[in-house]
Length: 191
Image: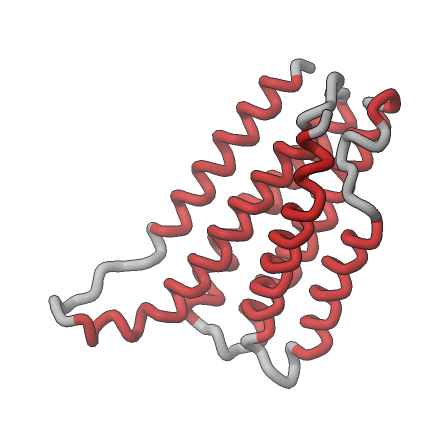
């Protein structure tokens, strides 16, 4: 499969998902700013999810930069990643509506965990399809992958005691992803 076609499909789905999320933030019934206070959790959930999606999109393109081949395994793992991504608007809407309840926060965290897992599987499949570029296709060390999983697993353990950790843990994951992107971007740019 042509890499550019997969990238185009991925770009389109990411754009649609990011757009759908904002539709869950409804205009208030009043013209006063005070009427926005009920929307604050939904707005915060939207901003966190949107930023994580955009950072993941950036990481995705860094990962595919040096790849020459996309085989069926890469396509299927990428499709699974996009499938999980397409559920993010649902989880974001639910957690934005009920940010202090564990069920929506658990759903949000599990979706994020599945999303990170499928991103990692896609990176692994991309490396297998492009063995001559080992070290340039998804150059990020495994330690960073473990950092992401540790953040999410720690959040899962805290969740029964403090449900908002779902969003907070994702915010920490987002910050860690930004730091990792900044750290490894120069290495990607060399190739």
